[in-house]
Length: 221
Image (cartoon, rainbow, N blue to C red; front, side):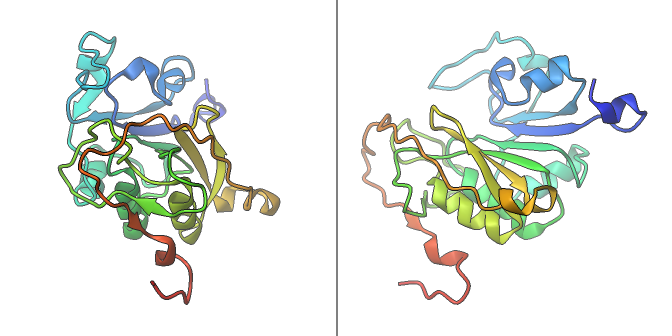
């Protein structure tokens, strides 16, 4: 049990979407073994062309069916009673992740302590590029997905979050609210394991360069 819950306080709270396989999520162990509370959201629980799991334990019971977009994410958090100062947010829609987190940051109502995002390890570490936003878009399995680690890091820093870690497999990156960190831990170097794991985009779509969105005084080229 988490110390906060043991002391009679509220249990730690998570929010995770793209939650098609509840047993394989960042929040799974926290939910099952550590008494965390929270919500799982997905547009098609148990369904995905990249690995469906209709019968995965918990799909029918705990995953709430919602299609999360940059326009409705704040409204959905309010609808489902998410605390404003909660503990763990995981954004893993495979497409609009950058834009959805950006919408939350710009709104400012919800300030999770830790944020995990799905990033694209096939994009160079020195490029700040993301997919072009399209509210109803879904990943087609190609390299055209989410955004580069640098794009997330620049945005996070400008809203008071610091890069903490990227998985060795190169898919999830973790950011921590800077006010919770020692000063020396607020500027860790980015690390990216380039995978070259995605096939080319059949539509040859161009990524959006967001490098100058969060650099004070910089002019977009």
